[in-house]
Amino acid sequence: MHNLAIALKKDGHTISGSDDHIANPSKDRLAAQGLLPESEGWFEDRITNDLDVVILGMHARSDNPELARAQELDIPIYSYPEFLYEVSKNKSRVVVAGSHGKTTVTAMVLHVMNYVEMPINFMVGAQLEGFDCMVELSNPSEFMLMEGDEYLSSPIDRRPKFHLYQPNITVITGIAWDHINVFPTFENYVEQFETYLMTVAPGGALIYNEEDEVLKALVERSPAKIKRFPYRTPDFEESEDGTLISTPEGELPLQIFGAHNVSNVEAARWICLEMGVQEIDFYDAISSFKGAQNRMEEWPTTSSLKVFRDFAHAPSKVKATVKAVAHRFDKVRCVLELHTFSSLNPEFIPQYRGTMDGVAEAWVFYSPKALEQKRMAPLSAAEVAAAFGGGVRVFDSAASLQAALEEPADLDALVLMSSGNFEGLPLKELISRY
Image 1 (tube, rainbow, N blue to C red):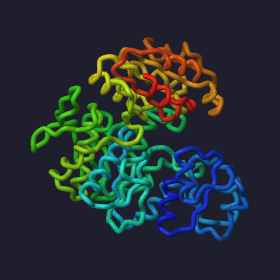
Image 2 (image 1 turned 90 degrees about the horizontal axis):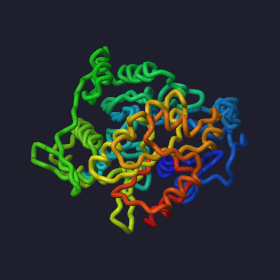
Image 3 (image 1 turned 90 degrees about the vertical axis):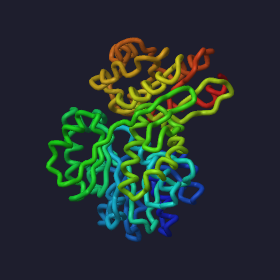
């Protein structure tokens, strides 16, 4: 939302906004653009007939006083994805969907487009090197590139976000159950992707990962009148020196690693070809891609220890990240924070069983405060350990996790996985002591 506000201001619009809590990096970026509200909270007197549009984020509640005032004044109200469609409906919309890899694939495509000097409009969910704002709406390009998140659009629009984009080109990277709080069964979750296929523009292009059996079956039975292009993970080799991927031009070195990321490269390649990029130019560009912020992002250390910060939180994402790092390094510690509604749900946690196998140390952290904030039932460390199938060390307080992280460790790699912030622990400061 803060990136959208900045993009609209840069395009010449007058922007205001509200939130009950504004944290960094949003806070500093809004302040730099003169967009930071004078105070946090909701103030209905900010909503007047002078406004052309109200854009409603998912974080607001349905009884929000500013929302109620906008409804009373009959001001047009858009959800975030609804607004993005509205400003891109006369362009070719390119949407990256799937339970995992969306941000990385979108970032890869954007990196390539930047490299070949083919500016486009876009919306990406993470910071990317070389870009000061991750939303661009004013470029005259025919393309609009967007992440296709399956979570709900707004508190008053319960449709998944990606149902609103009506893409001309789309990729689906895979399907793995997530968001149990809104999709209570796996079948219900899969239905969202079935519906999504029917929203692709007739004659549009679907690029899909045929190694995912659930996705492959869904695509094959769908009556959608679209072109279908399956892809598979290319051959690759990994060593301590990096990753080599097989291409028609020979072996290409990459700056990222893991089978899931090599698969992401292939998805990005298909998208770029559909957008008019030459294959040789794609490979030239992708060899310099270092990743998106918090997506296996390597943090600097003063020792030989490799430290990675990763957004992995759903079981499929955790499994892919752990597998990738365990394949590359011998002595690995993976630390996972259970932070989302799904990951803290006792019925869902068993989905993590086996996801952290293969590493020397598997740690799991959760905060009782997060359970309270989400109004969820208490959860014991023993329940978490049992759900993971044993073999994990569970921490139920930030203090105990910090104390453990401060202990000397004989490791080759440390991976910190979460969509949260480990309850505000000073992770970089802790890691700097290694």
